[in-house]
Length: 410
Image (tube, rainbow, N blue to C red; front, top):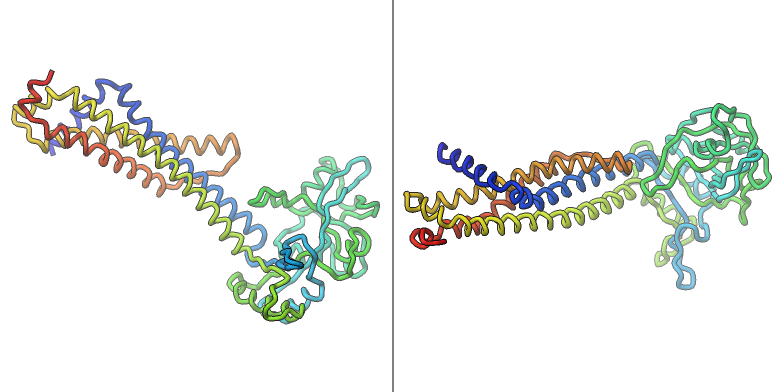
């Protein structure tokens, strides 16, 4: 133990002779470890944000959209010819066990006008169950009712972004009147803010009107009863995977699709979106980690080069120590300890730099960061491993010097 302590003290003394060279040698390790910690922290922060935003869409929600049709060799998707109807949605609610609530919608992007102010926003015609399925409470006023939909009442509920752009702070919103395509609509309420989706889309930038009002008086439609999206909620999240095949079978039957024909609709779940997002985040983090690992390897090569130079500079010293009884393992350990010290100190500084860098990016750019202690530990241990791996060759070279040749070295 005393010998090891003396070896460590001697290593610090040797490295302290030229602190600038030691600092530059550790630079690659510092950059590599710092990059690993910062990238993983930002990646985990982004992943957590995406998961929370997906949860804001409703954890037990399924989305059915028209699409996956092939007409004359052209495959269509979202935004193509609608193949879904109000009758489809109601049939699913009635016949598929596990579906607790249902809503449907059509939308278009139009100019929303209030007095001298205007704002271009998506106008969504939907049902009274929309805020229940989306778990989206009203911050001010109320949402429209089934009675409003049955009578095609000219009422509207605003998203927070639209309300902020059409009304001044402190101004009465509930009861005010806005116009969409010259149709006057009375404001019933304002929804709470949900912020942006993981794709950067502002969820609060829309207005909601009763489906019948949108269909007959505001948006219009070629065929009454056609919908652009169906929203379904299950009683429990675990039921989602059970109801998907039942919904698919029911819609295929209603649309008279033959066994060899493709679905003319697409069913998506929040779980599918979450998995896709997590996969993309994981791929990005792995790519960034690969790039950061290159810096660690470069840092290890730097340590090896400096130690090889140090072996050359201290050849006579090594010869004297061997002549005084030092064994090869002692010389090997001396240079290996120096390599480990360089990589360890570099690793510690790199960890601190990575945490500071992640916090700085969060402050400046607003990107969320979650410092992972597991990532910190792995990056640090990897840096120590790099020091040992790249320090072995120069340490072994030093230990194999011939004492007589080393003493004669000038």
